[in-house]
Length: 103
Image (tube, rainbow, N blue to C red):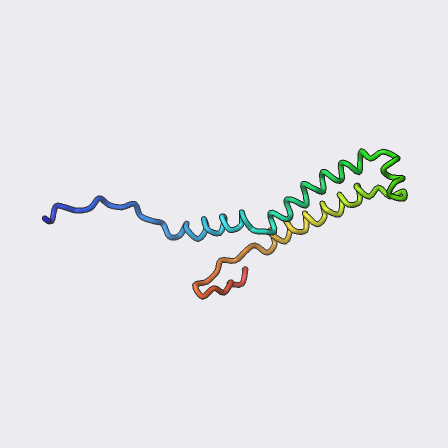
């Protein structure tokens, strides 16, 4: 080989963006987001069923609009899960496997 034979320069890998990318990817599949989203969707569906419930359905539940109350409760639980996700995000793991304290 001669001194003129050099490999083409490889693109620089920016290590500073890698942890941010992994963090966003980890946040996307955080179980709290999935559970919170499902509770919100089901809460809207069941709450809508309660809003449009007829008198027969309310009479069948001993006078309580159970779908409406269950839908509201599910909306609150979903909102709590999403608030928990927003207020206490996952922290990156150290090389030892221990999590660092969020700042």
